Length: 405
Ligand code: C6P
Image (tube, rainbow, N blue to C red; front, side):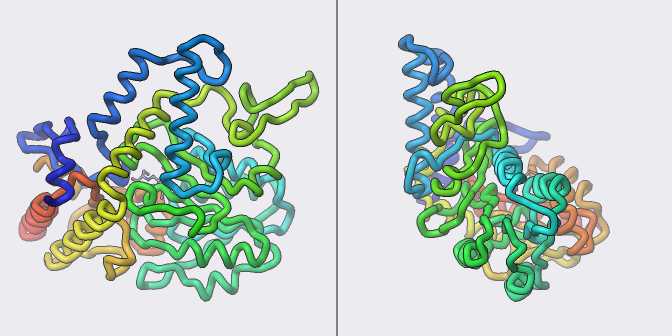
């Protein structure tokens, strides 16, 4: 049985009729839909176990703490982290990247360099701009080649003794390019720079193993991987987190506080000030359980096949341009495209009228749009519940738009 045939009935929202048509949801890269088990786990938590964590001695407090910390163990196994202390819960990818940029800020000095890439999402650019601006450091970008991959020779030339941080996406949310994480992190390490990976578009689709990637920091969101909004994960190598001063303060991240100073808590709580997203952690654990039951290798294979099909069918339509690497093996589960004569927003609106949800615009990657010479693109993205028929329907409707001109 194909993966979508197995998974589809688990997603209640897919029963919706939109604009008179059964919903075809091709916008999981922006936010995926949720299986029933995730929704039910969160409801069950609120109906039976809710209390604050780490502070209440009563039964519900202990149950909530147990559920929250068990979710951490589940994430640890899912991403192959060596230690549970390396799993910090955040509010999402952007929040995790901001947290690490705020934390590393004080390690930057005048003339130091933060390397990013031309394909970054604003969430992996702006926090570094803020950190660099405050410390007189500079942000420089590794360019991309015309085949939509990173120019690693240029990376070699940019990398130097002033490089403090190398921050880059595992998978581009526009091009779909899968970057060579292990190689980039090794080269960053060789010059003593901290490697920070934006895993927003990788965690939902690829089997992750931190022990193989050997990055220092890896940030991703739950809501793109079938889990709830409001929670994400910041993996940080223990040796790095141990020597960093927290960039944010509040309750739970301290052991003892005086008026003028405080003693930090142990990892990972040192980086989790305030009441954390507890129900969301329960939902994320349920999402991981669901993905693990399907099997991440199978998930990756299914979504790669859909992306490959979408590229082939869309490219065959006169007037359609597809962006990103040609080889499906080098791509994630997004396919950005443009239709000659149409603004990307109009393409999305016309598809919506047919019940097909895609995203359009600059995808929070304006420097990349400038590099591609476009104002924006339309983008289809895929998840476990999407079928080859849905991809063909997308291509048919796009072909009709093309022939209308
Ligand atoms: N990209 C998209 O439609 P948050 O919003 O914090 O969960 O994720 C931010 C983010 C960071 N990096 C990458 C590579 C991303 O793709 C995203 C989210 C969505 O492409 C919304 S702009």
